[in-house]
Structures are given as C-alpha cells and as structure tokens.
Image (cartoon, rainbow, N blue to C red):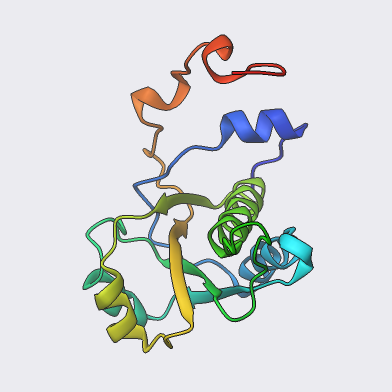
Length: 176
C-alpha cells in the first residue's frame, strides 16, 4: 500500500497503470474507493453519478467487447450520470453531468492511488457496445471508464508522465 505524505505527492506519484498484477481488489478496498466517489462534490449536491463496478469474470469479458483499452485489469468502474438528476445552468441549460462525473472519477482515481491501486482513465470505449453489454438505461450517460488493479511489479509510467507545459502557458490572472 502506498502512503503519500501530502496531496501534491499523491498527485505527482499517481500515473496511468497499463500493466496489472493478477490479483483481485479486495471488497474493503473497493468500498473505500467508492466512498471517495460518493463524497465528491457535484453541482448543487444533486449527486447524479452512477457507478457500475465491473469485476466479475463475466463482466470483464463483456468489457473486453467494449474497449481494447482495459489492459487485462481485474476491475473497472464505468462512471456515468443520470441526465434526469443533474443540475442545469440557468443561462443556457447546460447540464452539469459530464463535469460531475469527471470530478467523481478523479476522486475514485486518487483514492485508489492512495490505497496502492493503480488505474487508467479510459475514454476509448464504444458507448453503444457498453449500453448493450451492460443494459444501460436511456437516462444514463457514460462518461469515463476507470480500469484498475494492483500494478504489476514491472509497471511504470509513460515517459510523458512528467512532461509538463510551462505554467505560464496554462495559468493567467484576470484576463486571457
């Protein structure tokens, strides 16, 4: 289990794991990860997120028909939102669901890392196949797939993991 001293160390140390050990994630650990998603802030605290945990052999087989980017992970979480439950901005009726689900996914991902579980945020999946394989209702919108498991002993970050654009290109104060 990884123990980070502070949030910035956790944020810097976490990387997209694409090679997993052949070891299931214990239910207690999954529950802690899911708790972090439950605590995530959402617009007006409407909590429109819906999380499908995929960790049975049958479900993982279904997942393999929806994406090539699951890296034989022993578990995954499909993070969605219920379009009937999310807040909408008054000025243009833009729904908060995508943002809410992204915040939830980030919480899941960071809690997993804090517990020694590696993950990769995957958007490369076929939503039609996902709907069909997992019988997803019409009001539920898929946003992100978080594949996860304990990193293999030889797992390592991408060489691009520590490449950052200069802060001056990302941050501005008071005007663009």
